[in-house]
Image (cartoon, rainbow, N blue to C red):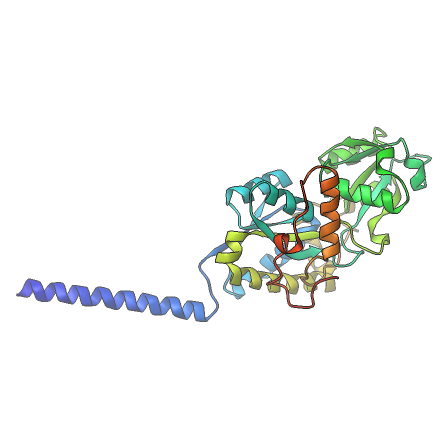
Length: 330
């Protein structure tokens, strides 16, 4: 009899513990807290800086989010981690998003992180120091350092076309690593190179001549996007939406007070030593969707290059549920 009573008491106690734990979980959810960790893959460049500011300012923790910013030294390593499911999302570009989807990893763009305006995220086609080249048409037959089949080559092609120069008239030289591309340019082994900032600024400082600059156009060619695996979007949608809101807050902090974050910027964006006292972080716009025109144009270029058999529809590549209506740049 005592044994039976003891078993019943033990069972009642166990049920009480389960109910209390469930209540605790409900309270946590009600307060907007989550035990899930959202893992973001980032390369240490200026494009990603607002995420590091959000981390530094404790915005994620204050919102009850567990966000892990995982650094990668190359886009290849970052993409492999996403394919393997080791990270939920990453900051990349439209070319990378389309290639990941083509390779069997279902991903979607949820927002721009840079490139809402032409002034954000400068890419420049820079001629070597001491060159006689000072006009785009003089680049015909010249060697041009690029990263093949990437956003770098896309921007180079589009800049040349906007200037009336056939991209096929230059001698493209594949140099994937940006620091190496810069050194080959400065050493005179390349006549020109396509470089993002801050490397374009450093090339100018060392005597290079900017021939074409994508911030001078009416559209941004080098848009940076935040992408997530579709399974992460399904399972962690609330966290992703909150992260975008906090990204917007951090972007405003950086844009309003760039000098305040200079030290963090130099460390996290790997700013070259020669520029650490003068080069400020760029301005960042609030989260918004990429324009349908830009998504289509990038993919048309990829199809022409045989990187894609056919373009994806806008809905296949972009998830519009995380950015408020009206945020899309038509």
